[in-house]
Image (cartoon, rainbow, N blue to C red; front, side, top):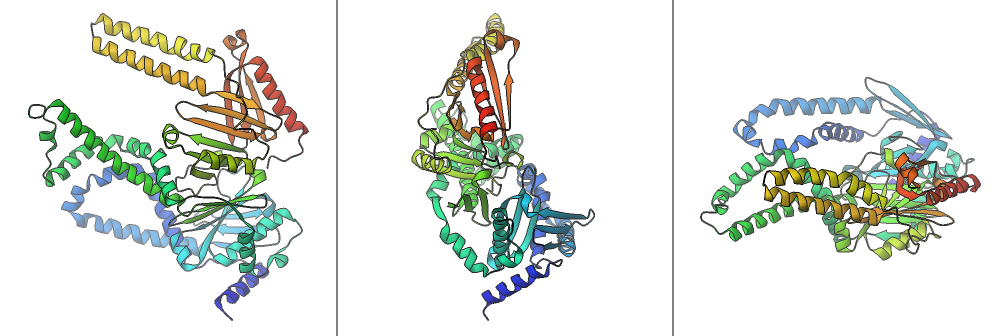
Length: 523
């Protein structure tokens, strides 16, 4: 009997026993890595300070040796303890998990509550043939259950068991315990590939994403130390920054050229990290569909697999920032029912399905596959009221500008007055672009909302997915017969400001009618 048959036999025996089972010893490595992520995830913003204060460590490296030894020992003890107390078992209709060191926890999760099943394979699991199985429930702010260090064959079979149970409630374990590799092969053979992302696409995504601005923002408190350390490093290479930026020895255009070159060099370094993050997150990206289920697989070191039934999809968001418009690319996000409760994870391991850096034609094909009757690319959007400009420019921005500009002119500070005028003009243009982007439309089946500033985002969702609608109207808005609507879905809320009363009532009534008359479930 070969290894595959042994795995099949063991899986069948394990499922049929219905006894408490232990994890593989490799789970110790998983618990160790999880503990490290928890610790350093809370101090990640101190990382720049640690990097640029390494001089003390270089002078006395033995100081850290006892601390490092104690940390590793504590890490291994906690990981082994977690491994020892972790137990799980399956019955016909539910999974049970016992875990916890100081706070004991026993979870009983019925299959009927499970809305999403995800497979995760860190690199050390991919080398050893193991996987993690994550089970999400409707309306949960966090993962309800996570089975770690399962043999890949067992994880595939349990995933098929849970998904099949949602389709046919009468299925039991004995009916599912069939050759696993064959079921997995059948699943993959029945899948239809919708989209793949190449490395060049991921490079574009790394360039256009906001990771670089997050990095720059996180480094802001340490700019002084960065400049000092950079000066030391460049001096070692024979580059003297003080001499380069000395206006007494260099022309102003030369100093400006040096400053621009140095800035571009630093941005290039930051951009490299952003591109690397995109490749690590989305390498090998593949979006496929199997019946009414959409499956995303990606990851360089850790392979993530997210499976989402179409019924769980709440809205589609086509996001295009200003740099995406230059590169003629966009991101497509498929928002699930608890997407707003899931923490942001740039490693692409969250339950959101994101299709990075696709073209307009690819976006249209995917949206048409999800919502065949949608008119997102053809429908005419209704603009919001021009009172938006009056409110933000006339009532808010203009009085502040007049006050500060008068102060600057009173003190004969022409330069400050010129700067204030430039800021006022820039903000006015941004508010105008913001007003120009706003738009609302709906047809017999879907609601469409457009918004943005320089970039533009489009939202499309079925009207029956709305769980709550709000009609907001202040005294000033009522006088002008305007209103703001807020539509709340299971994935979050979305608003449209300063519509006419007639438009707002039509949209709200349309949503309420579709919710009442439609027999489709929002889940």
